[in-house]
Image (cartoon, rainbow, N blue to C red; front, side, top):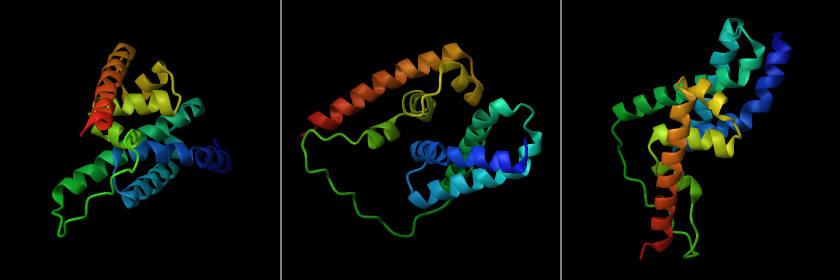
Length: 158
């Protein structure tokens, strides 16, 4: 793949990369850093991509690894100040789906995000996460159940 073709293909993926980073990282700057670092790593290693048809899968795998690196780094940091609580939504029936998604375990959150938000099929998700398709199905099922429970709690909390 030429540098120009690679650049065009990756540029079309930026929004997807950002949405996937949103499911992993809660700080805006970390999300942007993750996408930027992913693009840098993908550019440097583009020659190692053996089949161009796997570009999207390969780049998302890089992004997930970068997000994990950032999360590990954050665990080592000690916050020096306390941040104020986020504002409560005004509507009583309002559910912040992103907040609900972030409450899921990562094992269920990533397949749910890739399947329902990004539109990947089971085989592609299995390739990205390097797990069997049956595991993807069970994680999707478990994630849907947990998400339903979490969203219901958000709506009916006093």
